[in-house]
Length: 432
Image (cartoon, rainbow, N blue to C red; front, side):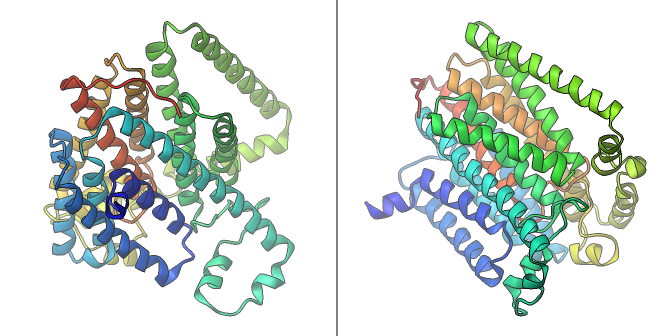
């Protein structure tokens, strides 16, 4: 019984995602590396254990996802990146396999709600603690400066910033990765607001939506995930209200309220932008950063160098450490990241994987089951937003981040729902 609970697919997914979410705070040093190693072992043994009684749904999405991860692993061995990125890609592979076990629709619905709750709490904690740490650093600078020279304390000092003048660094250790973290949890809070859940979780979800939006747009001032967020919201709300709930009078009313409120907010912001010089300067210089918009903060130069460095190495890619040493920490483009360090085959498999997952999500929208429709709508918008964000950021395809393993789980869930649809396994609507 204990073994069954330990290796239950739902528990493995939640423990793995929750652990990654916590470890992303980046202050655990060697302990964090040990936990990542334990997660790999845990995921591997859970797959072996569950294969005794369950089956994995093998379809085109699964085959492409597995092929992409395996080829990226092979490339990492060939080009010398295995020590740096091998464990990350292996974790992405294992969590995808774990989430691909065939289960009832009700199990998927319940897991999505539980996963959304975990990510909502993690994101709230990230935003609030990051802001509190920054204010503590501003109020008590000497206290942090006098802390002993110890790895965790050194990491904390790196995360201090003066919020009124600087972009929020956050516990993740970088404004962009903090924004990315907030973006992931924000999206799942939106999902949680779309399904039946308790009033407490509705309030926490709305709170996270507000706080994470402020974190992304105003505190970290991340243009990439601001655009990705708008893309996700547009797609999700449009499909959710105009397709899934087109005949629901209450949802129609809510949709009108959202549109009116959005237009009103936009008008207010435009008015403030016109009449307030400080606000206009903040938007143009700090949020949009118009002074370097044409070069995407010098990203275009990195793009060019990545293409040049990759020439002659298109089968298995190049060594990541050499690139980091000579050019930048990453390519600042998810597609270039896969192409540069995984090679052309990995790049093609990656695109086919994402587009096949989008196609499955879209097909699922035709289901008569409302929960399947909402999850599929969420998956469709989630992957599209992810691909938009990948235009100027690496998408954590090479190094561990929160969004990619979460997306692996979401894609697997969407595929299982498709399997259950075509095999006539219709579940009742559930609430939590």
